[in-house]
Length: 97
Image (tube, rainbow, N blue to C red; front, side, top):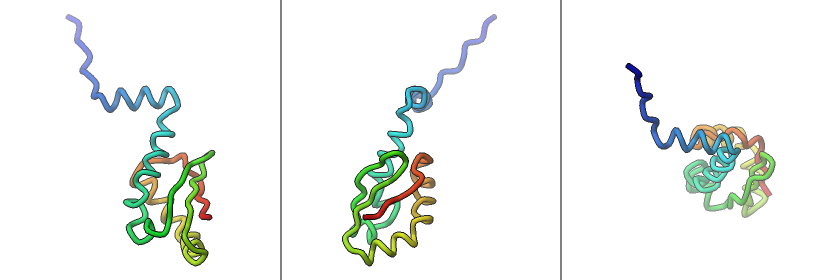
């Protein structure tokens, strides 16, 4: 008697399809942009605009040079929060401008 394979969950199937076609990183990078406020908190999100990801670099516009300098010091912590919140590992650097 043959056993049937157990059905897979839909999110698992979609994850496999996105990964195989190379779209999974793009989706995770979009998650970073859409969840920016949750990642950095309300105070930082009020003075920044997370614009785009290109070649593993996240570009964030900052309202003042003082905030830009502060964020440079917080870059490592922000990178860790990105990985924790979105499981995105394709972002290797952040440019604050």
